Amino acid sequence: STHSEKFQIMSADNLSLTFSAHVVMRPKPGSIKEIVEVYGGDDWYQRNLQQPFRNAVYEAVSGFKALDAKDKRSEIGEKVRSQFISFLKEKPFDVQSIVVGTINLPQSVAVAQEQKISKETELERKKFEIDIAKQEAQVRIEEAKGIAEAQRIINATLTPNYLQHQAI
Image 1 (cartoon, rainbow, N blue to C red):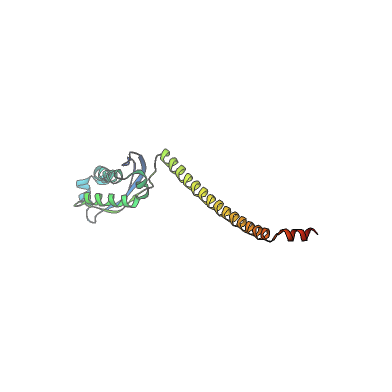
Image 2 (image 1 turned 30 degrees about the vertical axis):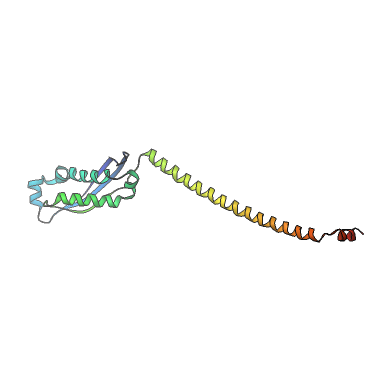
């Protein structure tokens, strides 16, 4: 059976993270009688395993900073799995899988991240424009050097005798 829990946990950098975590479990073969007698039958998860599962999730997530937690869901899931399976040792339950859902940051942090990305993109665009302007300026400098050299050559050939000859 699948059991889902909703969480609101403070990250290592004191930001509130909201998400869901899911555990898929089943009784070990031949353990139904023990589950009914020792663990309370139908509500065995709520009575015996819900709080240990929640504790495993809290411990795994609270060690991460908010932005790291958002990117490391599979690593968090593995930590939860390891701790929860350790708790279940000698108990008649098998864990099939544990999934940590999308971790949501507080709205203010999400907006700040979007603004940061936007500013970084704008900065890259401006750097690109500056590079283009520098290249265009270099082209104009080289053109001016060529014109100056041509004028120098022309001026060198414009002797007073040549100018007098042209005037006549």
